[in-house]
Structure formats: structure tokens, C-alpha cells
Length: 255
Image (cartoon, rainbow, N blue to C red; front, side):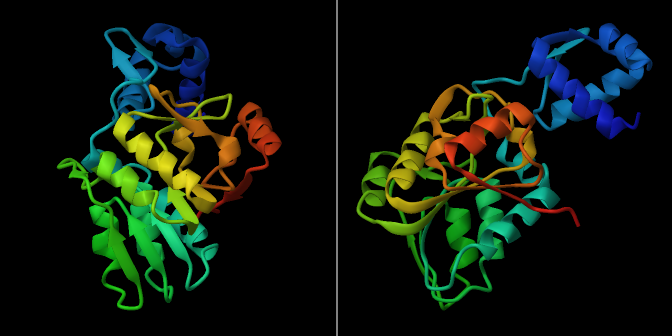
């Protein structure tokens, strides 16, 4: 078994059993404890698991990984997801684009469009899109977060609620097996809720590492999403929930 497949199975086992010992994993896969520790180090760097002395457990549900780290994680997958999502955005559309490294990848993918009218609470998205002179870009007011250029707060929510746009493009930190959309920051979730409620269609852009990932704050349910753009189909149980919700799934092929 190659390391990629073994690591995928380690993540599945941790999500199923919640806590596992290094030695148990070594025996299960027929490899050395040192090999398992290297796997855990790699998975921990991606915030897919959390290591402790002698074992591994679920990642934190109360704190997200640092923005600079998230920029590097799954970067190729995010670009592919972004290109696919951008293909479903027509020229001359009006958009909300919220906080997140995947939504920033979508902003890059939209640069060849024409006539977009974009409202965002993400300074990075605004900085990317304003270079296209055929676009109209508006930035929501509110408090700017130093860590990632996100804008949140009561003024941000009030600003978003003044508009009704064609498409809202949002990211997420986790989707659980029941189809609940989960995130870490309450203020960010309130803005995302306003986007969902004031967009005619909602695109969720997220890579497969968010499937089954836990976070503390509930944003909503996959049934409120019109189109999910990702890089790998959801796992079977989640796929059933997504299909029953009516959400369309678009998978960005590799390469």
C-alpha cells in the first residue's frame, strides 16, 4: 500500500474511532511505528488529524489552521475547483465572494470574464479582481481581520443584506456526515449566512479534506447550497445526503 492510500485510510479510521494509538495503526497496516508517525506528521500538517504522545485523534473543532498554511494546503486542488466553478459563472453576472483561500482561487479564475459585478468581504479577493477594468468591485464595510484580510461584523452583514445577487460563492471549513456546514468563526458565519440568504444561487467551493471535518459553529445545511464544487466525490454516506438535498455536485478532474 502506498503512503497516500494509507494516509487516506488513517484519516477515515480516526474519524470513525476518534482516537487511535500509533502501535495499533502500525499493526493494522503492517508497517513500523516510525512509518505511522511520518504519516501522522504529514496529516497533522494538513490539519486532517491531531497528534498526541503515542496516538492520534480528530483535529481541533475550535481553531482553524493559520491562513498562510491554508494558502499552501491543497493548492492544486483549489485551482482546479476554482476553474470549474468559474466556468459556471456567466459574463455580466452579479456575485458575492466571501472569505477563504478557495474563494480567492476562484477570484483568480474569474479574471478572464467580462462585466462581473462583485461584492466581497475579502480584501484579497478585491485586490485580485480590481485589476480587471471590466469589473465593478465593491468591498463591504466592517472590521478587517489582520490574519487573512477578511471583513466581518454587524456593518458587514448589514451591507450584504442591501443586495440581491445572481450567485454567492462561499467556502467552508467542514461538512459532516449529516450534511451540516461547519466553520470556526461566528462573525464569519454570520456574513456567510447573509450571502446565502441574498443570492439566487449559492456555490460552495471546497476540497475533499473538508468532508467529515469537524468545526464548532454551524453555518447551515448542504440543502441550502445549489452547487458543490470539489475535487473528489463525497464519501458514500455523505453523497446520499447531498443527493437527497438536491445539491448538484461538480468534480474537478485531476491534471
